[in-house]
Image 1 (tube, rainbow, N blue to C red):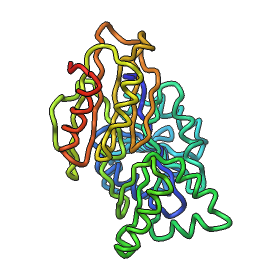
Image 2 (cartoon, one colour; image 1 turned 135 degrees about the vertical axis):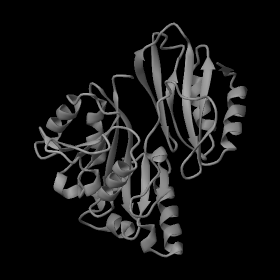
Image 3 (spheres, rainbow, N blue to C red; image 1 turned 90 degrees about the vertical axis):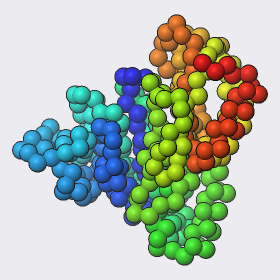
Length: 308
């Protein structure tokens, strides 16, 4: 996994707030993030972020003062991915802003290529207009496809509607797309702990506080695990655990670490790197309630996990 760049795809219909979210990510970045956008002119990057030198724009890459970079889709998606892949040093994370009429699932399909690892598909929703968009005879199918592709649905523009209307939209989205993690936001401001999964190499094993009252901790288990045990764990995780990501060692794939990824209720396992001699699984959890740690610990005990 060390040589793979985690990728977040940001989708959503025209006017949902994708550019606001990308700007928020760049402003609050604590990692070296690469962003692929439709065009530099579309994103309106804050002037304070643009590097103040003659080399700020070189070879189709816009360098930012905080170490992040932007690459335009003007020459095509494959070309932009190749440009990012050749950047040295490599970015810690890649964010791709899909166009407002594209299917983010198709964009995400490219993120399983060499050197990349899909983290999550985030779809922005204009809370004020989403019901009308879905019912629209011309764009409804496009909007529905975007929503169905989402691991994380950001109900944006909460500040523009009444509280009762916001509740109604939230309930409709939750019923229509039950596997997605649903987040409410205004002006595209979302905690990056929700948007980005975490890796576990060197992660602390103690509970730490992160912004917006989230709590994170690391599960470490020794020995080889069964796939059934992982499936049982995923089915028993409380809803307050919004993200999980890590590496597990399974008895049916003894030669490799398996990468576990969970966003909302969706979870996947895929082959990772060849493992070393140590049979230790590590999973980072992010939750909205500190009591979730005790709930997860009780579940682990019931499934026979051995703490590392």
